[in-house]
Image (cartoon, rainbow, N blue to C red; front, top):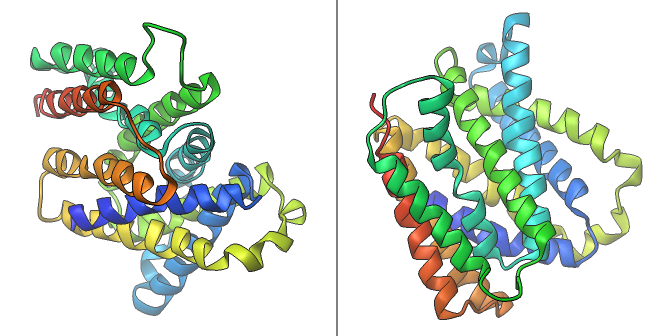
Length: 281
């Protein structure tokens, strides 16, 4: 299930880039994605478990933060990153989030961590520097790099908030309500009356993929997998996503990475594995 979700997420990167090229900007695409996913999940919950949609005022701040960070702002910055960078490289920057979570556990929560965290951090930083090829003229767009790292920081916050959210809710209702808050926040960032509806006829199949197979289905697969695998194992197996994404972008978009960037990608993924396994539970 984790591998399948990684493949679907990976294809979503290329599909989203095609939608962006068609003239729908990142804020509108992020809002459309959140709203569509919320509508699908809401219909599913109303048909199967409507009582689980009840929420209390105490839950609102957590759900709002979880939804805005993970389901609106992370995709928004990711869409900005893939518009400026190759899809595989944008995902590598975003995938440093587990390293940030481990650092938060060490310094924010003062939890013990294994020494491999520091090696993982060093490998990830060296890998990112290699991917960006900083030894010469910076070949990657600075805005894309900033967006990728911003997405990573918000993804780390999403992981931290999500670990609190699942303590009191099932994964499906949590995801549904979080998408609802993301949809509401997106409507403020990119109001619907400014949406370029004239662009939809030429990209509606791609938009349907982004909503259903690029959002709803993979999130449900990950939620189901978490009931069968430890979170660390899920995170490590999920690293097939940037590998699949780079391969698919190469086949469809012709985004070729040079040998140094491929080596940097391997360093980043190795660093993430070390960070994922560094936290002491």
